Length: 252
Image 1: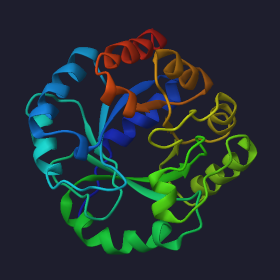
Image 2: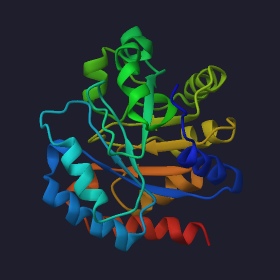
Image 3: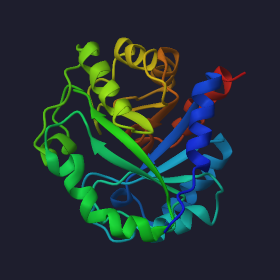
């Protein structure tokens, strides 16, 4: 039987325990080439990025493994898979966020897809981190909401978000990931982040709709352990250093 490693998860738990913060860059393999992944790795190294997530709701390209290998050839930053489907399992990564869409009511994304993917994940040797994934209304329809046939949690309902996070925690999830979605008009509110973070014992990741360093700081101040940024960085990679600097200053 495979022994599941817990190195990255231990790091996340330690961040929560010490009230420290981290910054993660989300890379959609459909939007880059392996060559660009290497270039992006250099920028992430310069900015001292803590984690890199690879994945997307829909994957058209077939070079996920090549992109991850290209990135890791240049960088030692831990690579976490952020899979939108069972096909997005890649042994080249360091860990996998095993997402269960606890904010939705689609059983396929609560357990069905996990049954399909379990054999390949068990054989992969990846560190598996059970993740309670919560989609929050970011002001526009998201790919994950469309594909999952699930409505997001309303932006102005922090109590509902907390109860959902509590359910995930009680079900044994290792961490909670609140996501306003790719291209969101507005990010998860500081009020909602604080409500959840203050009342759960497991780490909290927040992403979606964060466009600048000020947005990163808002999420961190509210209680996120890890802030994830994807779309904004795709448009302007110089933001990587600006955003990561906020985290470094926070941890002083």
